[in-house]
Image 1 (cartoon, rainbow, N blue to C red):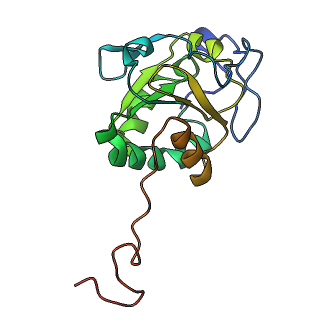
Image 2: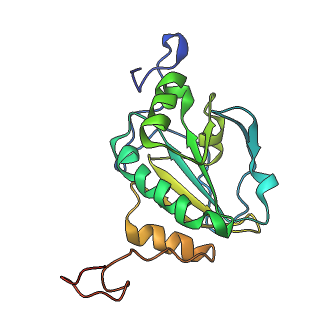
Image 3: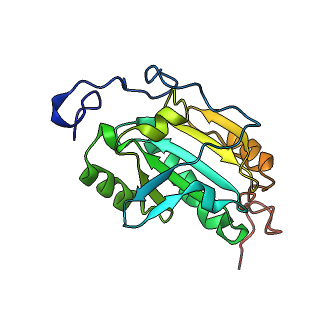
Amino acid sequence: MSSPGRCRGGVVSLLVLACSGAPVGAQDSPVEVGALAPDFALKRLDGGGVRIAELKGRPVLINFWATWCAPCRTEMPALVSLWNSQRETGLEVLAVNLTDQERRRDVARFVSEFRIPFSILLDERGRVRERYGLVTLPTTVFVDPAGMVRAIHRGPLTEDALARGLEAIDLAPEPPITAESRGNHVGDSPW
């Protein structure tokens, strides 16, 4: 695994290991709730590219992450589950990897390990993280269908934070399936 504080060519990065609310370095002014989401175009890990402006009309969740970020690893299964439960709503999940801080093969291994079905975007030069004023990893930005930022969560997503973000972009989170929601009582057989 590559060192998180190094860029290609051995140049020390301004980005400091940033998990659980730790700062990642001096960046542009942070994106603000109520502002238009800054446009960007990035390559996808599996080929092709994505431009956020082309997603207008769809709700978008942008998650900034890295393979070496422990909280990013912890929250990724919840994002996969969210995408699986919300894909019929048109929700677009964009996982923006800080590829300027790690090796592409580590990203591919991570994606395979977690069986990530949504778009993995490669911020190879760190320009998108700078444009969004990233200050910590993970960071999740919720964008409504009009392209407006409606919520930002810095740090690991909790169930409540995810629910609030989805509500801000007019999506309701899928409730967890429990015995009670199936009409069963605890101890009753589902058969």
